[in-house]
Length: 358
Image (cartoon, rainbow, N blue to C red; front, side, top):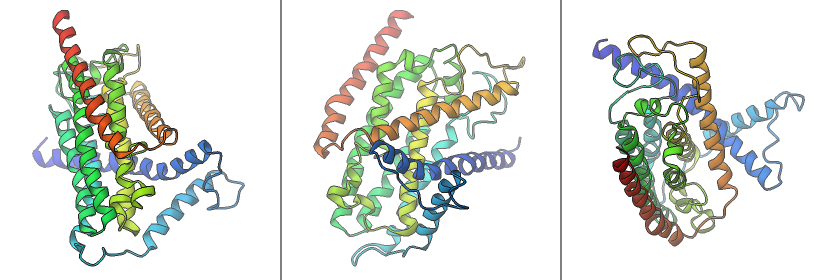
């Protein structure tokens, strides 16, 4: 393919993956999380936006999602208080939203060519050889959305929330990255497609790096600013934290970016620790060149990837409604005093075991 054709094909896959799946799931999660919290707290949850009456149970879900969308679209779009920066206030939601979308460029949700083989990967937008590094580079940019939005709001509550965003995301990104270093040490590649191929026959990342998986999940929940690590937007202390002065679609974009990040973190966890699209003891059919032969097994592999991802999404949401919020000093202490040393120790032990086993 020419460069123009490659760019066009990548754009088509990006639109199909991000807008055909990720945005749809993130939108539905805004409803599911409220229903899940209601079940946990013995409440009913949202149940008034019926379409066509109570004879159609699914219509309540669709009606609520449509009602939420209409509500944020028609709410008053407020400007920051006097002394704020209107331009930065307007663009800051996009600075949080766009990196969450771009993370999907390097995440494979279906089988691609075997390591070393050449061929088109239909289930991956960009098969770059430093996929993990690119993912972290994109992820680190999202902190600017919260920090800039908080500063531009000219509000004490927002400023405190923005400071917490910066400190918390920097703290836990270190742990998040260190726990993936052991993965590409073991599988010998930072290309996510190669890492998934290396996890065949239950040689999953969670089996070879169980401690790293636990630390990764804890750090990922803190990275996405979800309870019990939701200190940047703690409503009991900071009203809504870094997006206190946002309303209408700007508020919705901040909220939706958190759900998209939640899905992306789950996808990374599945890719690196739960075998990705691999089905235990089911071989991926390939041709003589090492390129997958697509068929019903491919459909099952994509389905198993999505099922694993939904499980990790559910797990993160369940933790949110199970554990109480930490104090901010506890969040910082957990990251720097416990998780970081444990991550380094796990990496050191991994290196020793690999040296002795070679």
